Length: 176
Image (cartoon, rainbow, N blue to C red; front, side):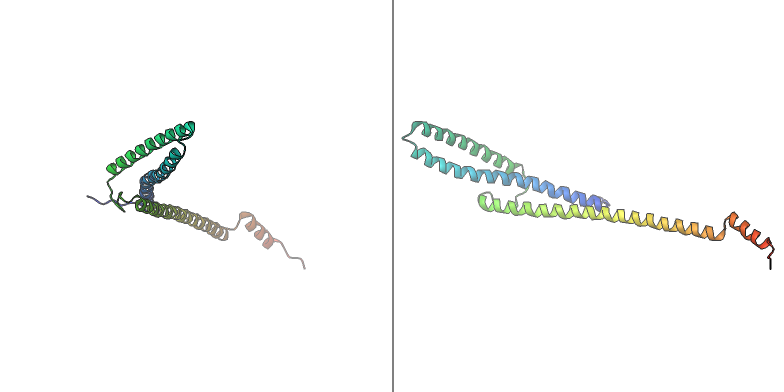
């Protein structure tokens, strides 16, 4: 495989994109786990409410419907998480058998990649600023050299009007 030469800004941009890809992947799994935790807590709460509402049929029916919807969403998210894991080529971090550890690890990974993105985005800005500074320096040097040329030209060739005035002054007789 032949190696390619990349400009600093191109390499930095590729690194930003890499970090953003990781963030997107990890965030998706993190959000699913986060929602699963909430739904599991909600399930426990709904169980309690269903048991407590047996004397009130309308409340009882309402809580049973909410529990059914909660179960459907839990099932749907579990399937989504399963398909996400199957599609992923990586198996880093804690295993899925410990969701809380995995959730914590994902949060740390997201934070690390966000810091990486910020670092490389800052590098891109620094490189662009350095290029602009060099252009400004070259422009300033060109301006200085143009001014110096004009001054040298002016010193070498006095204006015709000035020569004529000097010549005229020399030709005038002096009166004593």
